[in-house]
Amino acid sequence: MSFDRELFQAIAVGDTIVDRNEESLASGETLGLFQGSLALVGDNSYFGFTSPVRGERYRLEIEPTFGTLRYQSLLADYRRYVFRRPVTLAFRALHFGRYGSDAESNRLSPLYIGHDTLVRGYRIGSIRADECTPAPSNPNACPEFDRLIGSRIGVANLELRLPIFGTEGFGLFELPWLPTELAAFVDAGVAWTADESPELTFTERSFERIPVVSAGIAARILLGGFAVLQFYYSEPFQRPERGRVTGFVIAPGW
Image (cartoon, rainbow, N blue to C red):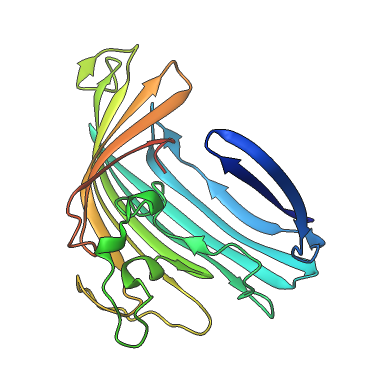
């Protein structure tokens, strides 16, 4: 992976460009990375129209990276689905982290737990500057955002899924051309680094790396037999200044 930086300048007088300039700037060092992975995977789940509804799935994976940077990525992902017609109680526990000498390098993009498929209600584009609580030790910090990123993350999700529209055998109402599922959910997650451990306490306001939690409802719709549209309404408890958040993502249920 190589990088290039160029500066383009234009001087305008009124509506007329009178001069242009182009300049090459120093860029980051080229990265050469080699990766391999080894995983133990199990899956005896049964999929409904928009989400798995019965069984379990798991994945344990290690991915070493060599070259310019040296670190190991570790993934542990377990999911369980308990079906009691017509509802499914679904649970997921996930950990992903980077370990090793270069795991904390600022040349790697940090991990983020606020994605719509992890902890809903903390989407990166929805966090405003006026939500940030100035920390006495660092007035430029934003604890409400900083606690969402790190080199290691842990996520837990709980959903109660109910098929509203579907077929005669799977759905409260028969509407096979627009399968729809409603879900009540609770999401929780925490991000940390090798130098900053999380403080595992539940509170709405803190300067520390505390877990973030949200709860709400979601609707998943299978469109055209291949795309699952998810709309959600969430209450993110560690964003007291924002309140309720709505969101949309194209992704099947985990």
